[in-house]
Image (cartoon, rainbow, N blue to C red; front, side, top):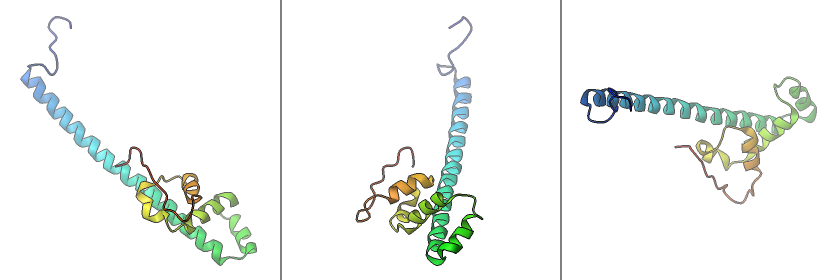
Length: 127
């Protein structure tokens, strides 16, 4: 360390106090951002499930001809619609909603698990 420089956390009480305030403020900001990001993540998953429920209900209600007409008006293709129908028809998944990713492709894969068992969910990095 060059002469005249003092370590930020060593013995300099005024700097230490300022640093403590900075880190405390940063920790508060981290917590606030974490809450906002997690809330948005869960909203995204909730939106995916809502979309999937609509697709499943629509699939039961409409004839094949009406579904074909509907497909022309949707922002996704028939394959995506089918995946969403499968998600929407899986009664196990909504109970695990806040432990699942918002990706409909991932949810589709999970919906394909053995239907006689509850899917085992291991969430990495989610509170």
